[in-house]
Image (cartoon, rainbow, N blue to C red; front, top):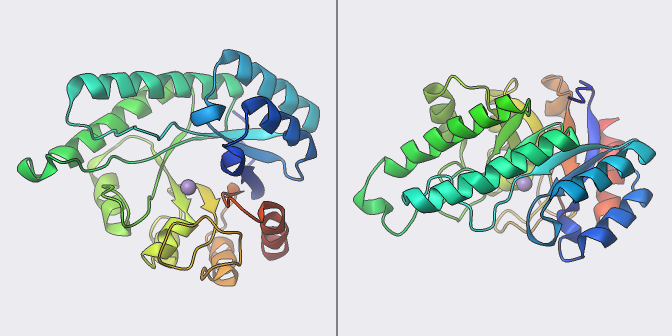
Length: 263
Ligand SMILES: [Mn+2]
Protein backbone atom coordinates (compact mmCIF):
# COMPACT_ATOMS: atom_id res chain seq x y z
CA UNK A 1 0.00 0.00 0.00
CA UNK A 2 0.96 3.61 -0.49
CA UNK A 3 1.55 4.48 3.15
CA UNK A 4 3.21 7.85 3.33
CA UNK A 5 2.51 8.79 6.93
CA UNK A 6 2.53 12.45 6.14
CA UNK A 7 -0.41 14.82 6.22
CA UNK A 8 -1.64 15.43 2.70
CA UNK A 9 -4.57 17.29 1.19
CA UNK A 10 -6.81 15.47 -1.23
CA UNK A 11 -9.92 16.11 -3.25
CA UNK A 12 -12.99 13.92 -3.53
CA UNK A 13 -14.53 13.55 -6.97
CA UNK A 14 -17.98 13.75 -5.36
CA UNK A 15 -18.34 17.24 -6.84
CA UNK A 16 -18.05 15.74 -10.32
CA UNK A 17 -20.41 12.81 -9.79
CA UNK A 18 -22.92 14.17 -12.29
CA UNK A 19 -20.25 14.17 -15.02
CA UNK A 20 -19.33 11.04 -16.99
CA UNK A 21 -16.39 9.05 -15.63
CA UNK A 22 -14.20 9.81 -18.67
CA UNK A 23 -14.66 13.55 -18.27
CA UNK A 24 -13.78 13.36 -14.56
CA UNK A 25 -10.62 11.38 -15.37
CA UNK A 26 -9.50 13.98 -17.93
CA UNK A 27 -9.88 16.68 -15.27
CA UNK A 28 -7.46 14.83 -12.99
CA UNK A 29 -4.63 16.19 -15.14
CA UNK A 30 -5.38 19.66 -13.74
CA UNK A 31 -5.55 18.69 -10.12
CA UNK A 32 -3.30 20.56 -7.70
CA UNK A 33 -3.23 17.84 -5.05
CA UNK A 34 -1.54 14.44 -4.82
CA UNK A 35 -4.47 12.56 -3.36
CA UNK A 36 -7.79 11.90 -5.08
CA UNK A 37 -10.80 10.13 -3.63
CA UNK A 38 -12.94 8.38 -6.21
CA UNK A 39 -16.56 7.57 -5.52
CA UNK A 40 -17.41 4.02 -6.52
CA UNK A 41 -21.02 4.81 -7.27
CA UNK A 42 -23.33 6.40 -9.84
CA UNK A 43 -21.59 7.45 -13.07
CA UNK A 44 -18.20 6.85 -11.44
CA UNK A 45 -18.84 3.23 -10.41
CA UNK A 46 -15.55 1.40 -10.85
CA UNK A 47 -14.69 -1.61 -12.94
CA UNK A 48 -11.34 -3.14 -13.86
CA UNK A 49 -10.89 -1.09 -17.02
CA UNK A 50 -11.59 2.16 -15.16
CA UNK A 51 -9.21 1.27 -12.35
CA UNK A 52 -6.43 0.54 -14.83
CA UNK A 53 -7.08 3.92 -16.43
CA UNK A 54 -6.89 5.61 -13.03
CA UNK A 55 -3.65 3.80 -12.24
CA UNK A 56 -2.14 5.05 -15.46
CA UNK A 57 -3.23 8.64 -14.74
CA UNK A 58 -2.05 8.27 -11.15
CA UNK A 59 1.40 7.25 -12.32
CA UNK A 60 1.63 10.11 -14.80
CA UNK A 61 0.61 12.80 -12.33
CA UNK A 62 1.91 11.29 -9.10
CA UNK A 63 -1.50 10.70 -7.53
CA UNK A 64 -2.53 8.44 -4.67
CA UNK A 65 -6.13 7.30 -4.45
CA UNK A 66 -8.67 6.50 -1.80
CA UNK A 67 -12.04 4.96 -2.61
CA UNK A 68 -15.44 5.87 -1.25
CA UNK A 69 -17.50 2.68 -1.14
CA UNK A 70 -20.83 2.52 -2.94
CA UNK A 71 -23.49 4.02 -0.70
CA UNK A 72 -26.65 4.50 -2.76
CA UNK A 73 -29.18 1.86 -1.67
CA UNK A 74 -26.55 0.19 0.50
CA UNK A 75 -27.40 -0.73 4.08
CA UNK A 76 -24.90 -2.94 5.90
CA UNK A 77 -27.48 -3.38 8.68
CA UNK A 78 -30.21 -4.67 6.37
CA UNK A 79 -32.53 -7.18 8.05
CA UNK A 80 -33.06 -8.99 4.74
CA UNK A 81 -30.58 -11.82 4.25
CA UNK A 82 -30.81 -11.99 0.47
CA UNK A 83 -30.67 -8.23 -0.01
CA UNK A 84 -27.73 -7.96 2.38
CA UNK A 85 -25.96 -10.72 0.47
CA UNK A 86 -26.30 -8.75 -2.76
CA UNK A 87 -25.00 -5.62 -1.06
CA UNK A 88 -21.99 -7.42 0.40
CA UNK A 89 -21.19 -8.77 -3.05
CA UNK A 90 -21.25 -5.23 -4.41
CA UNK A 91 -19.02 -4.01 -1.56
CA UNK A 92 -16.60 -6.93 -1.94
CA UNK A 93 -16.18 -6.05 -5.60
CA UNK A 94 -15.43 -2.45 -4.58
CA UNK A 95 -12.78 -3.65 -2.10
CA UNK A 96 -11.13 -5.82 -4.78
CA UNK A 97 -10.99 -2.87 -7.17
CA UNK A 98 -9.54 -0.70 -4.39
CA UNK A 99 -6.77 -3.27 -4.00
CA UNK A 100 -6.07 -3.10 -7.71
CA UNK A 101 -6.00 0.70 -7.46
CA UNK A 102 -3.66 0.44 -4.45
CA UNK A 103 -6.03 2.77 -2.61
CA UNK A 104 -4.78 4.14 0.70
CA UNK A 105 -8.15 3.38 2.28
CA UNK A 106 -11.67 2.20 1.47
CA UNK A 107 -14.29 4.34 3.22
CA UNK A 108 -17.76 2.97 3.94
CA UNK A 109 -20.96 4.12 5.62
CA UNK A 110 -22.51 2.48 8.66
CA UNK A 111 -25.96 0.89 8.42
CA UNK A 112 -29.35 2.55 8.61
CA UNK A 113 -32.49 1.77 10.59
CA UNK A 114 -35.40 0.46 8.57
CA UNK A 115 -39.20 0.47 8.78
CA UNK A 116 -39.14 -2.71 10.88
CA UNK A 117 -36.29 -1.75 13.25
CA UNK A 118 -38.71 -0.85 16.08
CA UNK A 119 -39.91 -4.44 16.29
CA UNK A 120 -36.40 -5.86 16.69
CA UNK A 121 -34.42 -3.73 19.12
CA UNK A 122 -30.66 -4.20 18.77
CA UNK A 123 -30.95 -6.37 15.64
CA UNK A 124 -29.80 -3.64 13.25
CA UNK A 125 -26.91 -2.69 15.54
CA UNK A 126 -25.76 -6.31 15.62
CA UNK A 127 -26.13 -6.69 11.85
CA UNK A 128 -24.21 -3.44 11.33
CA UNK A 129 -21.34 -4.69 13.50
CA UNK A 130 -21.23 -8.19 12.00
CA UNK A 131 -21.27 -6.93 8.40
CA UNK A 132 -18.52 -4.44 9.24
CA UNK A 133 -16.45 -7.31 10.66
CA UNK A 134 -17.06 -9.37 7.54
CA UNK A 135 -16.02 -6.45 5.31
CA UNK A 136 -12.87 -6.13 7.38
CA UNK A 137 -12.08 -9.81 6.82
CA UNK A 138 -12.60 -9.41 3.08
CA UNK A 139 -10.43 -6.30 3.03
CA UNK A 140 -7.64 -8.03 4.94
CA UNK A 141 -7.63 -10.78 2.35
CA UNK A 142 -6.94 -8.14 -0.29
CA UNK A 143 -4.63 -6.03 1.90
CA UNK A 144 -6.95 -3.04 1.84
CA UNK A 145 -7.31 -0.74 4.83
CA UNK A 146 -10.92 0.16 5.58
CA UNK A 147 -12.54 2.96 7.56
CA UNK A 148 -16.10 3.57 8.71
CA UNK A 149 -17.44 7.12 8.39
CA UNK A 150 -19.51 9.14 10.86
CA UNK A 151 -22.64 10.04 8.94
CA UNK A 152 -24.99 13.03 9.25
CA UNK A 153 -28.10 13.94 11.16
CA UNK A 154 -31.05 13.77 10.67
CA UNK A 155 -30.90 10.44 8.81
CA UNK A 156 -31.61 7.21 10.74
CA UNK A 157 -28.00 6.01 10.51
CA UNK A 158 -26.72 3.84 13.35
CA UNK A 159 -23.38 5.61 13.80
CA UNK A 160 -23.46 9.40 13.91
CA UNK A 161 -22.14 10.28 17.35
CA UNK A 162 -18.98 9.67 19.33
CA UNK A 163 -20.99 7.40 21.70
CA UNK A 164 -21.92 5.12 18.78
CA UNK A 165 -18.30 4.78 17.71
CA UNK A 166 -17.18 4.11 21.29
CA UNK A 167 -19.69 1.30 21.57
CA UNK A 168 -18.76 -0.06 18.13
CA UNK A 169 -15.03 -0.16 18.91
CA UNK A 170 -15.66 -1.75 22.32
CA UNK A 171 -17.46 -4.59 20.59
CA UNK A 172 -14.95 -5.43 17.85
CA UNK A 173 -11.34 -6.59 17.74
CA UNK A 174 -10.94 -6.03 14.02
CA UNK A 175 -8.82 -3.23 12.67
CA UNK A 176 -11.42 -0.85 11.26
CA UNK A 177 -10.35 2.78 11.07
CA UNK A 178 -12.51 5.84 11.50
CA UNK A 179 -13.07 8.18 8.57
CA UNK A 180 -13.87 11.44 10.33
CA UNK A 181 -16.27 13.54 8.31
CA UNK A 182 -15.86 17.07 9.67
CA UNK A 183 -19.02 18.43 8.05
CA UNK A 184 -21.11 15.61 9.48
CA UNK A 185 -19.55 16.06 12.93
CA UNK A 186 -20.38 19.78 12.74
CA UNK A 187 -24.08 18.89 12.56
CA UNK A 188 -23.98 17.37 16.04
CA UNK A 189 -21.25 19.64 17.41
CA UNK A 190 -18.75 16.82 17.96
CA UNK A 191 -15.75 17.71 15.77
CA UNK A 192 -13.49 18.31 18.73
CA UNK A 193 -14.87 15.34 20.70
CA UNK A 194 -14.25 12.98 17.75
CA UNK A 195 -10.66 14.17 17.36
CA UNK A 196 -9.93 13.95 21.08
CA UNK A 197 -11.66 10.59 21.61
CA UNK A 198 -10.22 8.74 18.61
CA UNK A 199 -6.76 10.19 17.84
CA UNK A 200 -5.45 6.73 16.91
CA UNK A 201 -8.55 5.43 15.14
CA UNK A 202 -8.89 8.31 12.67
CA UNK A 203 -7.12 7.23 9.48
CA UNK A 204 -8.90 9.45 6.98
CA UNK A 205 -10.70 12.81 7.03
CA UNK A 206 -13.43 14.29 4.85
CA UNK A 207 -13.46 18.09 4.96
CA UNK A 208 -16.45 20.18 3.97
CA UNK A 209 -18.58 22.85 5.61
CA UNK A 210 -22.21 23.60 6.44
CA UNK A 211 -24.38 26.06 8.36
CA UNK A 212 -24.78 23.58 11.20
CA UNK A 213 -28.26 22.43 10.17
CA UNK A 214 -27.99 20.56 6.87
CA UNK A 215 -25.38 18.39 5.18
CA UNK A 216 -24.66 20.95 2.48
CA UNK A 217 -21.06 19.98 1.59
CA UNK A 218 -20.12 23.67 1.26
CA UNK A 219 -16.65 24.97 0.56
CA UNK A 220 -14.19 25.20 3.48
CA UNK A 221 -14.88 28.40 5.42
CA UNK A 222 -18.33 28.95 3.94
CA UNK A 223 -20.19 27.50 6.92
CA UNK A 224 -19.89 27.37 10.68
CA UNK A 225 -16.98 24.90 11.09
CA UNK A 226 -14.13 26.45 13.09
CA UNK A 227 -11.30 25.42 10.75
CA UNK A 228 -8.60 27.13 12.79
CA UNK A 229 -9.59 25.10 15.81
CA UNK A 230 -9.77 21.99 13.62
CA UNK A 231 -6.25 22.44 12.25
CA UNK A 232 -4.93 23.09 15.76
CA UNK A 233 -6.47 19.83 16.93
CA UNK A 234 -4.97 17.95 13.97
CA UNK A 235 -1.58 19.25 15.05
CA UNK A 236 -2.26 18.23 18.65
CA UNK A 237 -2.95 14.62 17.68
CA UNK A 238 -0.11 14.64 15.12
CA UNK A 239 -2.49 13.55 12.36
CA UNK A 240 -0.44 12.30 9.42
CA UNK A 241 -2.84 11.02 6.80
CA UNK A 242 -5.16 12.46 4.16
CA UNK A 243 -7.54 15.38 4.61
CA UNK A 244 -9.84 15.12 1.61
CA UNK A 245 -11.94 18.08 0.49
CA UNK A 246 -15.44 16.72 0.04
CA UNK A 247 -17.16 19.99 -0.79
CA UNK A 248 -19.35 20.07 -3.87
CA UNK A 249 -18.62 23.76 -4.58
CA UNK A 250 -15.62 26.11 -4.24
CA UNK A 251 -13.37 23.06 -4.34
CA UNK A 252 -10.15 24.76 -5.44
CA UNK A 253 -10.68 27.58 -2.95
CA UNK A 254 -11.19 24.93 -0.26
CA UNK A 255 -7.89 23.29 -1.16
CA UNK A 256 -6.08 26.63 -0.93
CA UNK A 257 -7.68 27.42 2.43
CA UNK A 258 -6.74 24.04 3.86
CA UNK A 259 -3.19 24.41 2.55
CA UNK A 260 -2.90 27.76 4.28
CA UNK A 261 -4.23 26.30 7.53
CA UNK A 262 -2.41 22.99 7.63
CA UNK A 263 1.03 23.74 6.18
MN1 LIG B 1 -17.98 12.12 3.85
